[in-house]
Length: 136
Image (cartoon, rainbow, N blue to C red; front, side, top):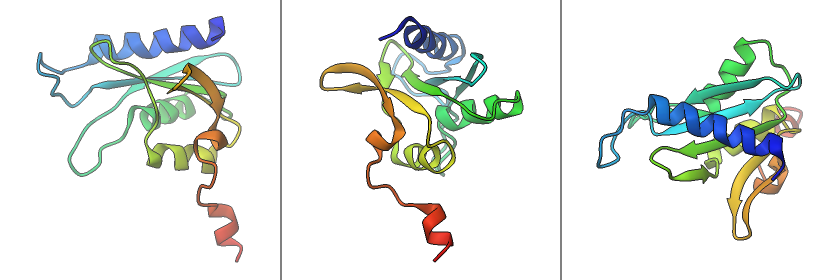
């Protein structure tokens, strides 16, 4: 992992540890933190908002915060669980959204060889191609 990647992991860890509302049993509405590195080297953070109807994941909140701050080309993203759970892989919905909207983004994710940074297409190699579907 590069120093930049390690700093992004730390930013995600810090935001969820500071803002989690989970009790000692792990239940809460805010249990995942995310950090996004934009094209200007700025870091944007967010936390999830769990709801049984499908509240937003931390990745989507952080990407929205990045956009609201002027980021147009996010470069790197990572999600971290509260209570020391470490780096977590994005869910399928987040993978598809990132692939559709930010095909250049790299994702820091756990693998069988440890935590690695990879292109979103490596996490969603045969994802639905929304743009192609619209033109047919």
